[in-house]
Image (cartoon, rainbow, N blue to C red; front, side, top):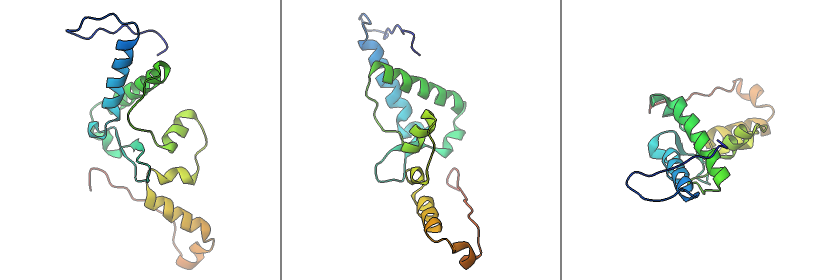
Length: 142
């Protein structure tokens, strides 16, 4: 996405000297990051960061939408366009290829994060409860 994009808005007269391109990036990133669109949702952490919505698999061609979202976010960064919404720490670290930690789970699933912390802090938990760690997720509300 480092190539230049020529933008013309239908019904508007204007020469794209960069402003129209930035406006297009702003419109597109606002749309794909909006939780109502269905690709992202507000995470469970206290900082209201965006996480990938597991139910987004119900959107036809959802993979293409995520590719588009990534391209638009990348172009927005190159154009220095502010995007509404902030991606969660674990998502940013994954995109940058950084190693994840248990703390990164806090934005996505706070109760699982707290359970894992409890298990880590209590070394004998397996002996006491004679259990293992199992995660069960729900999709589409069921």
